[in-house]
Length: 378
Image (cartoon, rainbow, N blue to C red):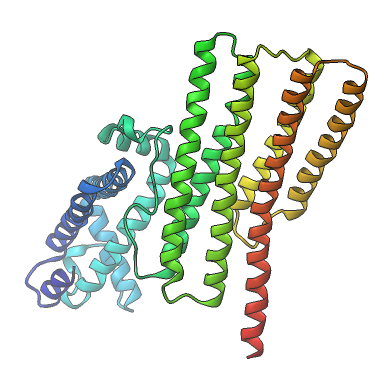
């Protein structure tokens, strides 16, 4: 682009040639991104192809209205420079051609962005057709999406990459939790075992995610971080630790279901309804936790998180009281009572780890506020 501007400033090429060269440069510059993406995962390749498609569409649109576009650019260049504007690019003074090229380059990206913003779904479809996601990168496989590209020297970029990976981690945990009700309703052993295997796979993925994100955050903490950045790393480490613990408890619930099934222990409708309600309470707490993770750290809903956790504890107390009364009255035998109490206790334990995540975020916010106030006074 700099070479093109020099050539126009010296009068070596006219505006129409310079604009044509600039259009070609916008396409050519996508080559480096696509070369870099050859060793990336499918998400990286799609980002590179999106860059190419974006600039190619802009080039085609520019060529369709090439000469009217040249006249408009020449008009604007003269208008902004204080000359009497003329809607004819051939009358543009040589001294104003560099300004005209700058205007074109800016408008090329702005107008292209505005136009394509109305066709994002179609844009995504084109990119997905260009790059297929391989089976090994499916949802049920371990994959780092944001920190697999390596460690940068910019602490803020590392923190943002870790935050994005934590958001992805949280979504996986929520997905893992939705498998639990299917264990209860599975009629055939093959169906039950497939669901159990999937939960176990997710639990293994959560272990690896916790390990890899923690390693990345530890390296980030060793870099030159501000006090606020260090506190955020500490908060993130707590978050990933608790997310992994949530995955562990979900797997324990699944194994309790398996032991119950193997022992031919059956709950009546009342017990199943109680556990279904507990599941809904935990799902609500998970949704609030996930929203807090995805929101800006300064806009979390801690009150809703505490209310959800209180509802879980309160209902656990109700179930425990009813359970003790049922045991005294021999309503069900020990095997049923043991499996039942183990399940609602595990669900309540989930609530403890879930609230820990929101508390970690809130602690980071409060510490950052204190640090900011200290710096202002200093």
